[in-house]
Length: 172
Image (cartoon, rainbow, N blue to C red; front, side):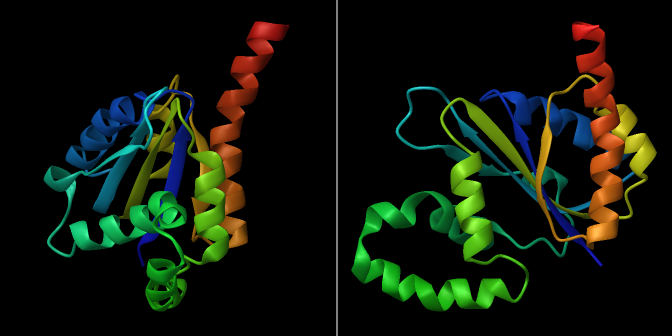
């Protein structure tokens, strides 16, 4: 089963740096990427830039239509007005079946703001300790996942240990 995770970065280019790390992990077969996309929102820009990471995706990738619809729901629906918004209701209903519901959309709108970036990854077979090691030093926050609460807790625990060590080193 594939896992959808969303990682937020405190800079508009943080997700770009993470892309290189993700490519290396996949090359070393430490994670299998089914599909991925980046959202970067430079400070002062009216809307974020989005792109699918096509060179990393497998044959079963969801494709640009999925990412276009998802990012459209997250970033552009409020600007389109009620008529289009009503038509989008049917689309959001079908996405809710895979864990992308109104709550997910709202949370992404709140989290991804000007000056930040995010990496959306659909993956499986991750060797979590090796993935953690590869991302050390990159400031990132797990924003959303479709893992079970137990699995998500373990993932957050693994990545928060690094944050605690880093903050302890700067404050202590």
